[in-house]
Image 1 (cartoon, helix red, strand yellow):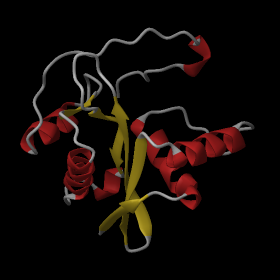
Image 2 (tube, rainbow, N blue to C red; image 1 turned 180 degrees about the vertical axis):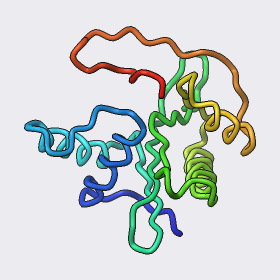
Image 3 (cartoon, one colour; image 1 turned 45 degrees about the vertical axis):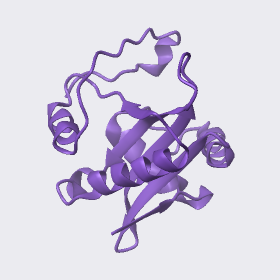
Image 4 (tube, rainbow, N blue to C red; image 1 turned 120 degrees about the vertical axis):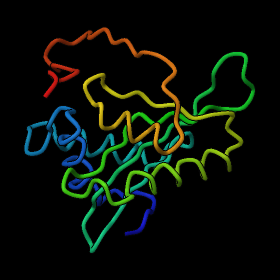
Length: 156
């Protein structure tokens, strides 16, 4: 397994992983080309990095990282809005490898810290984050402005 920067042609695998995470499944949707174009733009932003984990030629993990400015902190904070490992590939160190690379990139950017959010019902994910050295420091709150998105998904 290796971790590398994502490329535009990784979109099919990334979109499948995001759907597995519970994000809206845009595969085959009329507006999928728009989502693919948004992914390509994300890859070229100066304040982001997208990482994929590839195992035996198959994309098995994805992490998006955004370097965002927080008030009263001069350095940026690395925020991980997306981290997912294919369900059939979990437990093999892929998530840890992705987070290790996130940390390497965050340190190279001079970030003061890293953060991510995880749905309350993802208890196994929470245990994983704590196992690899992250601390549970709060809650995330969402107010949906477009009811057609049905986000976040209902707990499984």
